Amino acid sequence: MSSSGVANACDETKMQDCHEQMSALDELPTHASIVARFGLYEIDGLCNPQVNADGTVWCSCLHCHCWHSYVEGRLPEGTHVQYEVFTREFVHGLAAYLRERAAVYRLPRVKVLEVGAGDGRLSHYLRLLLEPMPGEASKEPVFEIVATDSGQRGLASGQPYGHEVHEQDAVEALAAEQPHIVIACWQPLGVDWTAEIRRTDSVLEYLLIGEKDGGICGHPWLTWGVKADDYCQQSWTAMTTFGRNRLGY
Image 1: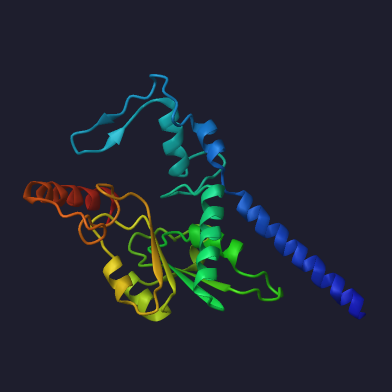
Image 2: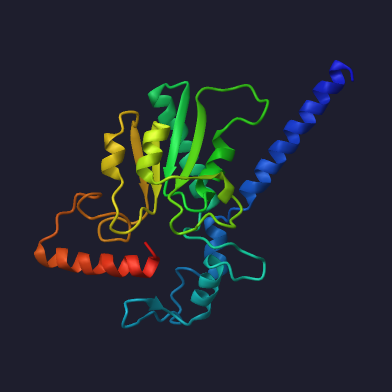
C-alpha cells in the first residue's frame, strides 16, 4: 500500500473512532429530555408521595412509576440500572471543569481517580471526552481516567462499562494510583473517604458529587464538617442504620 493509502486508512480509522465516540456520548439524555419524558417538576396534583413505616418513600402516579422503571432498568428499550442519571450537560460540564483545573496546575499528565465508581459510567464518558483518540498527537494536558470500586455491591457486574472498573476500595486505590484529582460520586451514606484523600500527598483537589448537609452522601461531620448535637446525632445514627439496610452498604 502506498503512503497515501496508509494515510487515508488512518484517517478513516480516526473518523470511525470519532463517530463511535460521539455515538456513545449521544447515549446520554439531555436535562430537557428527562424533564419532558417523565414530567419532572410538573405540579399537576397527580404526584402524591407516601412514606411507609420503614421510611421508604413511594408514589403510584404514572410519572413516578415510569421514572422508577427507567432507573431500575425495566423499560422495554433495555435501560440498564442507574444509581444516578447522568445528563449530557453534566458530563460535558464536568469535563470542561477538569480541563480548566488541569490548566491551572500546569501538569503534562493529569491522573483522575474515581473512587466508588459503581458501574463505571461516569469515568467512561469522561474518558471519551478527555483522553486522546488512538493515534492522535498528545495535547497537553494528557488525562488518565481511572475508575475503581470495592465491588461489594456488584454494581459493575453485567453493566456495559463494568469491565473498565478496577476492583479496589478507596484506600487501596488512592495508595496504588497516587492521583492528582479524585472524584467521589454519591459517596455511601455514613462513609467518609475524604480523610484518606487528604492524606494522599499527590492529591491536588477532590470533587464530591451528590447530596450534602443532611443528604444521603458521606458523613455529616467527617465529610461535611456539620457537628450535630446529641439529639441530632442520635437521629443521624438511626438514619445511617436505615440507609445501610435500605441501600445495601
